[in-house]
Image 1 (cartoon, one colour):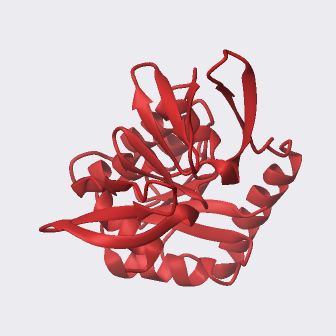
Image 2: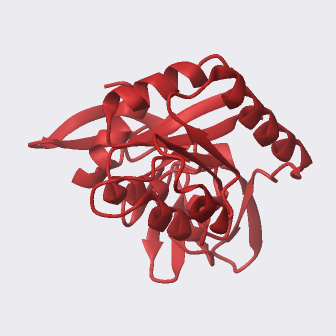
Length: 238
């Protein structure tokens, strides 16, 4: 089971260096990067992750403030601060950070952090890869994750689209986004969650905009929100 990681740092060379060091650990998958606090919070709400490697001095909001917000999620991620200064260590552990790394990060020190993360993942129960939905007759149905093409928000509920049918889920889009594996699903809009394995084509939806064409019966087309475009381009390697 891979460890899904976010990297948040306002300096691209620092993100690149950490990405390079993490590449030595095949159990770690970097699922997103952000350069500002606002980008970090948007990314944290659109992908599923297990750990965030977080700089403290960020534009607009400190890493400490970002950590408090991401740790408020129902599935609490681990937070590892990565900073050029050691003066924030006490504050960092006050927000229950897993660890505190000082730049330049030593590979051996990072390896110990990855080992701690791996041990924590082993203790977790494996997820059940099913979504509970309500069929037309009112009966409860369990759908395999792979049967889901996309999901749309419907107030406090959600509409789950398969190849040729639509089901009601009593879970909100946010709740389903936290439950579904980030390796397969992406939040492309405030109202849409998509199974990337069901994307048949990607088209331009306007200046700096993308439109996804799904491989379902209707060949459904969904617009990607501008704020999600960059992260989606990185995931699809466009």
